[in-house]
Image (tube, rainbow, N blue to C red; front, side, top):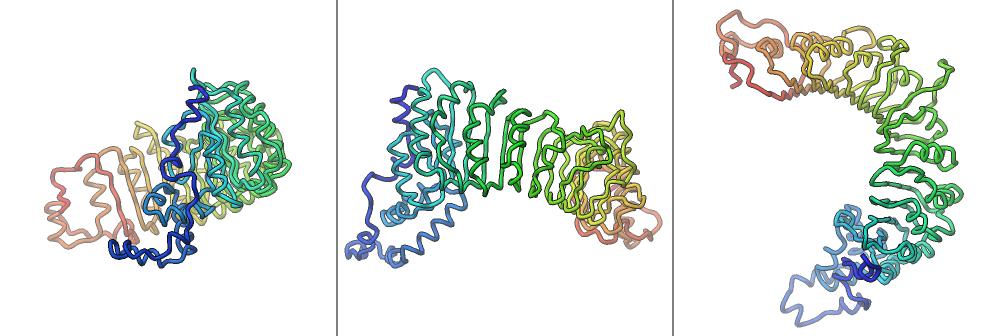
Length: 486
């Protein structure tokens, strides 16, 4: 796309408003003809502008399109244009803007005139700024066109930006990125609270073109609290983690990074409360008695971790833990069962085919979601036997979800160790047997027992789970011909 075509790219703002400003006071003056024709509008006109502005601001918090408001009537369009917070989210791209980036309350700007109009309406309000680089195609604009568009905003509003997002689309080379960002970042980002860097595909040496903005953030963004990185390599993370900005983060999300990172990468983040990492977290320190302090961490999600590494983390305040896969500790020995105590843990989401997960203990656990992704019932049985063995320190949740092809006998034995269970959800992946339903059915009368199970002795055993209030079964097949679930 040529620069001329890029400048004429469709813009939602051009479709909903003209360049001239609308006087709200003029619009609120009574109009006899209007009142006679549409008397219902009188109530709308009597509402103070300040109230409408507050309503519109709440509307934008739901991430809804501002264009929908401006198309209702001339009054609302005038009020909307004079409400700065409606215009605080700006997305700049000299390339073709896909519909997905135009969604929500973001104002997509592809030309300098649109940028100036949106910036004027935003006034002195704090801003959320997204810069999109690429995709690099035959008709894409030159790097100079991109840089000029970005500079039309960054040279005026950087100190008021609270959220900065840089998106790198496919086929963007490092040279094109560097030229497109030439002279864009100068000044300070003193109000910045959230930083997001996302690449459509992994790019080696991505840190180089972004070094000026990262150094600016490191020097001036003392309010930075959230960092989101996607498709950046391990070298990028290592360089960023050595800067002071890393220690200010309370929330770090790293996606689509599958190389192993050492647990000490996040050790300097003393304020960290939320950590989501899609790759492998490892522990490479030869001093095996030293633990990595994650004291303030409350929510932790990791793609791959061994119980040996988990044992080296100090997680005194962790509330929620999500593990996508547990790695074996081979050739090192695994920690003993129930030896990794996480004192404040209440929610555990776990996917594993390894019985070593039984090393975890959580005295305050309330919810456990267990997924055993295996086709062999023997493997699932082994995990269930170890995790819910009845031994001291075993996990005893009140709410349990199990997705696994476990045999009924081992499942029932495990449930007998959970007398305080309140809700149970099972995706058995194999048909439930009649024995399972017999054990799960509370004591019933003789007539009801015969109706359910045929002639036989009256059921006298106490219920398997006396406190159970909710039971959800994913029935892949109706269990038996004689069992009637009426």
